Image (cartoon, rainbow, N blue to C red; front, side, top):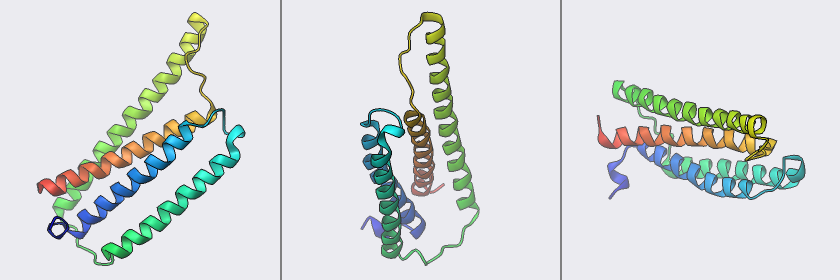
Length: 154
């Protein structure tokens, strides 16, 4: 069976990626559908953040219990190498996403000053969501890279 061929570390990574994807698919569409800034959506944002926290905590506990994550596996050089590579990919994704976001803000300011036209009015909520999205993408790519190297084996 597929799960029997995996180590506890791989199972833990798969479950973490799956939980992150579920939370992202729940959180980001809800937030992007909101109009206005944070002040206009305080109640909705509070409920959404609270529910995401509960989903993350309960999901992590259930996954930890199902996988019996108490069985620790000792790390070797290969594990440290996979971690280093995955952190490099996660950092590169974060750097790229933040650079694109900064470029987006600069381009928006330039179009206002040069052409008296604003293509997007960034609210505080949008800025926070874009930064959260970049963090989520970096975490996802970090874990996916680690999974790739574990499945590949070298």
